[in-house]
Image (cartoon, rainbow, N blue to C red; front, side, top):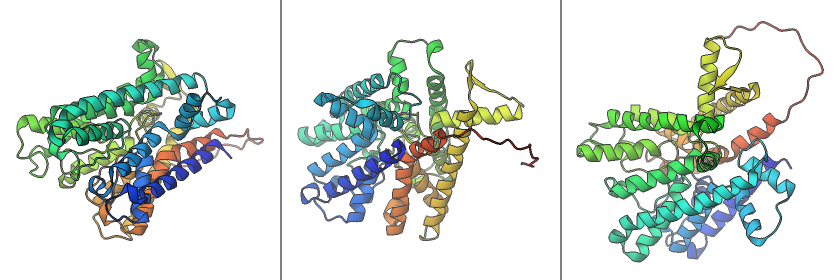
Length: 432
């Protein structure tokens, strides 16, 4: 079985086992259906964050622990998790296991692959531990020691893995002006969302000149998109009474910061997403589709894909035959992969939106926002998730799943190539 296909089967198996675990009587306080459990397990394994019931009141402590485990499993990647378990047991990984691991981490080669796994383990343990301790200073005074510590651990795991799950009914709206929440949560999902390969190079002590081309593109793209999203959210929502209007200037800036940086990766909210202007929602859709960095806990088409697509467009209008960035050339195969990934993503979002619109009564913007959030594994919603019928849930489940494992399958098909035996004369085709 091809590695990407096997990984897709493993992710589907993890989702089914997670749904069974959530259906156990020990996992819940309230009655939930198999559809609820399957949707929630898919959302957790794909680190999306969309929910169809209140997990804070419907799930028991054990159920929330199951959910946190599924989030951690999906954020790490199944093969990374397997490698860590085998390493802890002292068992060899083998060449086949490394091939599967390479596909799961979306790497082009197996060079220094195990070093990347060690970087992932260190990043997860250190960041989630520091995040949980820091969040205790905010949650424990309000919720007590036991509940406060657990909420700190759960939200730290959810934030670093860019899942966006919260046990609070209204998300983090009650902590909109809390300085700890506005610093720790964004720091966690930004670190988790830029990619483990970037973290490895940043931790190696290399200078900017010695960074790989991928790392430079991710850092530059992130440095541009974060200020853009924060400033645009503040400008568009400054006087909106449903979001920023009515708050002090300082509160407006804090909410804009949090909501601006969370859009591309995680799905936390400190304001009412459904009350945003249509223009802001459209901007959020574009940011959710872009996503974070490759080999990270974030979703979307990835920053590198977006940047290469822009570079290829500029190169076309400049009549350039070679694509360059930071003194390095980008191969033709990489450009083809970018175009194919962008086209498939666009078609997937379009088809899913169309299927939900013809089977539901809802605004186009609400449906498009929901589908984009599912594909980008973000988890933000304009309060439309609860309105989905069984068919709509199935569509969103498929979109979340493809948003998580689709690039792996696409990479397999792009990696298989054959040398043509015949060459045909060039034909004329009119474009544009």
